[in-house]
Structure formats: C-alpha cells, structure tokens
Length: 632
Ligand code: PRX
Image (cartoon, rainbow, N blue to C red; front, side, top):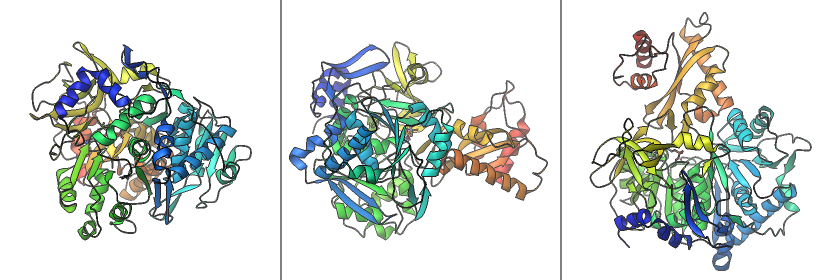
C-alpha cells in the first residue's frame, strides 16, 4: 500500500521512470528504447523501439504457470450453454482462428472486422487478429446495416468474421441479413466472410465469399501459429465511436501502451489477482468489453466471464448465481443494468454466496445516488466503484484506486484523476484552468495522453487534432467533451456532455447520426434529436420532426403511424439501440435568427426545465409547441 497522491504525482512529474517500471509487467520481444516520444504533439508514442504482442501477453505467457486454469468462461442463458476454456484450450482455439485468417492471406496491418454476438468465437477472433498483427474492428451487434456499412467502408477489412445470429431475451436476432445489406451498401467489399453457424437462423452463404467457420476450423485442429512481434506503436485495433458529426470516428489504439496500461490497471484499479475471476457484463462491441472482458483480465492471468443474455433471465439472480459458481472476485457493469435489477425481487441479492466478490465497478454513464445506495446496501456494503472513462482512453480516467491506497467513495463521484492522467478543468470560454474547488469546467487532459489512450483517428490525423485538442494558455489539452467539477478533496463529479453526444443505457450515441437517419425518411423535411433524462436508461433520444407533407397528419393515429415508420427507418439503418423513444411532429423547430437549431432549449423543455436565455430565438411559438407536446 502506498500513498495515492504521491503515486499520481510521480506518474506526471517523473513520467518516464514511472511507466518504465510498469512496462516490466509486460513481456517484450525487444525492450523499449524510449518510454514516451512526445516530440510531435499531440501525437504520443509509447515504449518506442519495443516489440511485443497483445495476444502473447493475454494468452501465451500464461501457459508456463496456468495452462490448466480457466481463462475464458462462456455463459449463454440464451442458448443454455456454459463452457470453460483453460489457457491451454484458449491458446489452441486462437491459433485455429489465426490459421483460418492466414489461409485468407491476412497479415500484419490488415484489417479484420468482427460483427458477432457474445460468443467465445468472438474472443478467439479478436485474439487471433492481434496474434497476427492484424487490426480488428469490432462492431457492436446491436448496430444495423447502415452503421455497419460506414464502419466497413472506413476500416476496409480484408476479412469479416460474423455469425448467423445473436439472441436476446430468447428471441433470435439474425446478423447475416444485416451484414449482407451492409456489404452491399459499402463501397469497400471484403474478400471473405467467415461465418460461425450457431444454427439459430438459416442463411444462404454467398458463393466464393462466405466460408464456414466449423469447416475451416476442422482443417486446423493442430494449428501452430506463432505470435507476430510488432512494434509497440503498431495499431492493435480500431473501435468506432460517436461524436458531434454524423461520421463515426475510428479510435485507433496502439499495442505496447495499451498492454502496459491494462496490465497496470489490474492490480491498481481493480485489485484483480492472477488466478482470480473477472466478470464484466458489457459487450465486446464497446470499449469496456475490449478492455475488461477480453484483454485486461487475460493479461492479468485471470479467468474472464463472457456472458450472452439479459441480467433478468431466467431471473434477476442470474449474475449473482455466476458470482457464486465461478467465485467472481471483480465485477464490472453499468448503472443501467443495476437499475434494471433494482426492479427485481431484492431477495435475489442475498440468495447466493457472494463472499468471493471484492468490488463492483460501474461505468459508462452517471451513477445516480439511489441506485448506488441500493446496490451498496444489497451487497452488504461491498465496494461500489464508479469509474469514468471513454472509448478514446481505453481505461479509466477517474476512479478511486484501492490497489494503490484504500479510499472512500463519494456518492455521485467517480473519484479522483488516476495515475498517468494530468486532468485539468478549463473554462470553456477563456480556456483558463480552473483550480478552485467546485468550479464547473470542461474536463481535459494535458498531453501527452497516458499509455493505452487513442493514438489518432484511423486514417485521419487532422480530424484527431482538430476534434480533441486545444491550446489553452501554455498547454495543449485533450477535451473529453464532459462538464465536471472537482471538490475540495479532489473528487470529480461529471455533469454531462458539452457536445451532441447522448448516453442511452450506457451506449454512446451521436444525435447527428440519428438525425441523418430520420431525415432519410421520404416524408421528413427536418428533424432535431435531443437526449432526454430517463429514470431507467439515464437518457433516451427524443426526436422533433417537421413533415414534408402534413396533409395526412391531421389525427393522432396518422401521426403515430408515421412515427412508427420513422422508428423502423432508424431500426433498420442504425439499430434499435438508436431508436428514439418518441418522434413528435411539429410545424417549426426553434432556431436562432441566424438559423442555428436551439438544441439546448429543446432539451430543456423536453425535460420540463427552464430553457434559459431565449433572446436570440426567432420563433418562440416553436418552443411552446414542443413544450405542449411533451407535456401531453
Ligand atoms: O459522458 C461520459 C460518459 O460516457 C462517455 C464515454 O462513453 P464511451 O466512449 O462509450 O466510453 C465508456 C467507457 C466507460 C463519457 O464521455 N461516462 C462514462 N463513464 C461515466 C460517464 N459519465 C458519468 N459517470 C461515469 N462514470
């Protein structure tokens, strides 16, 4: 145990020595020659000259000590499957998948897109890619053809790995038709598609393009595919995320920095120990799934649970039953999931033996006090650790780090700046740093970003610089696009986004993407989408649209019909995750006299709040109409 303030100070003031020490947690083929090259800000290169491999550190290196210990525990309450893969078995499966990719000519630097449900093969696929030095791009299974197509086009994968279907709440969700549509829509076509056939949904393979995973795997039962040693700065993956514009950004991650950052986070943030069990309930399509279902726990020599299913099926005790059965030590989930559980019988929380569990980590969206209190009491006072981060950062920015020094949590706060992060609150107008307690500012990170954070935006360095970086007096800072305050003890409180990103049930969505999708409906002239506070999901998307032809919209039934059609467009293009909770039809949208949409005002009235200063508004009746619609 140390002193957290000293630990953090050293990570900033003696940066290279600090990270050189943590680099020892990773196995290198060639040791790094330089810890951090920040000669071309804001681009930071970590562990320059070093060569390593992410798959080696997640799998192969553990064979000597724990080959027969569990590595991957796949649990599906959708298909009633439970299967544990030891490190030795995982090693074999990953090599089989890697051999299949090699047969298709996949080599270092090639992109492979993974569009899969939460099945063990998805983990094999990710690990096989990084084993070969290929760059994976996992697309969340909840995204539909249009979202998928933009990602295929941007990543230009040589191969796509997919499956016939996922399953949700007992309902089969076919993937293949969406994938076929997406490939049709995309200007880039993959050479091959590897299909895992779960036999959930029948499909017709595309001749010459689609390969059956089981058939290919059978050819490679004894596959030996060595790890490709790559430079520390070689990209391990890209992961798309939403921002202000409609076009998703491919967050690009390196190899060495990411491996070191995750390796260091296991003991310091999560107190995870080799041989223990980690259960992260996220999805591999999100950053939390990348870092804490797959790479972090495996790098840390732990067993990791990959769970397909709902938290309440067969009942709200399913996750706790897994904690008991697999002696889970560290659990990681999202506040929305806990709010869902809160509606279940509270007795389910005490039905199982949870003595192995050290802490429950929650991230992705604000953790409200009632939910935090409910779960804390329900789990008999176990540590509930709210942590704050982003797709871009790859691992937490704010948390308490009990592995460094035990510290109390404060309700509503994700804790303090983690080692490596030089967090500054800045005034959004003047760019001045706000050093006093309880001042509201934009949460920024002074460069260089620590290891594991994004290197750039895939294929668009200029966008990376322009989107995130700002020179404030004497400093170059990365903006998180989140408002925050810091109290007198150094604990931060997150107050929401500064941009048009919304957070629905922990899923980060761009309102512009949703607006673009809605606008493609032939009868929509204009639309504004805002995030509105929701008891269960944190936020939901709400749309206010102007119809081109209003002649048929005279009664409520006709408006409901059009609303349903618009929702279907969003479902089929972006996926149900992005579907607005309501689409209201209005005759005008509130704008400034110069024609700028007043999103903040729309959001405020949709939440029943005071819209604030409206002196620049062109047509007050437009806002009045929205107010009345939402009230009704
Ligand atoms: O607005 C913040 C919110 O989620 C955003 C990042 O979402 P994503 O890229 O999907 O990464 C999630 C990784 C956990 C942030 O900009 N957010 C994330 N964690 C918290 C949060 N808001 C409040 N409290 C949190 N703990």
